Length: 69
Image (tube, rainbow, N blue to C red; front, side, top):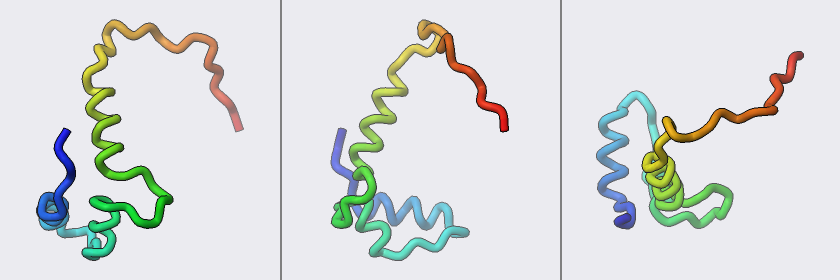
């Protein structure tokens, strides 16, 4: 997977103009400095791996019980 570029993230921001993200917010996705969140590249890689899984061949999760309030 290619590294995320700031210009690509800027284009996404322009497409979703109703959300106001600063350049600093976008730079954190491209090159994380805070260390609090997973880098955007890591997230996109994980999503790509999930996309490759054939969910039709994945058995249901048995034994998971719903918690009621």
